[in-house]
Image (tube, rainbow, N blue to C red; front, top):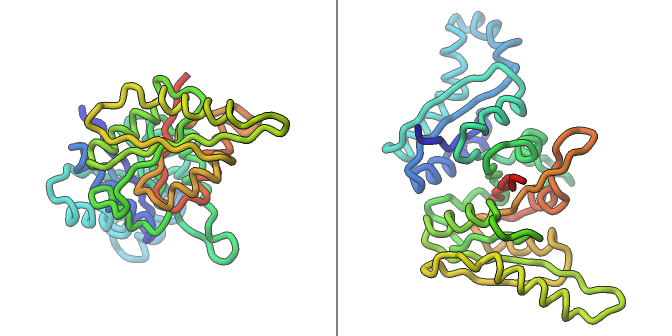
Length: 280
């Protein structure tokens, strides 16, 4: 069975734009599209609302959330196989479980008002930190659709262990499917009491190692940047249609956690971000 591209929908504008993006991604990959609405609303409030509207609960839910998303996906990509589901549980748990049988998961980013508008919603952050598949969070203006990117490149943050990187494979595949260049980025820090040559050279060597087996027909650029990796990737995101980062998760007092770099770009990137699990 072909694994689907899964979208977490909730009826909001950002989640509907995520449906557009995911439909394009599914079309690129020849994959089915699965639309999932996970909420305790169905369990606690849905029956009462359905009674007030004199309609079956399932009809109310499908029309208000999943049905709207399905109609939008079919209108955008009529050729796709689209399935839907409603999960009566917290979105974080339902979507993480869905990720175990998904090719990738796409989530909208619900911005906040005022000084915190750049911050990421808790659902997106939790799912990105625990999912079993790549999670694509639509940062930025949401104009960078998968089939018609406006900047014409995929960016990849290269980590300390580039050989066999799942993030690299995902980025190469995305760039190849779209027919655009791949830009691999490695940040380095100037030592306090030594010449910077060795750190810069190490960054160059890591990029060469990472791109050693990239298909010859793919245009792969290399960029070394002095400074913090998070800041370098946020800057690069302004020139990319998708930023790909690996997630080597660590265990903490509240379970699996993302690195500071992945956490930072998820909050502040100017384009969609794909967080790809790096399995040990």
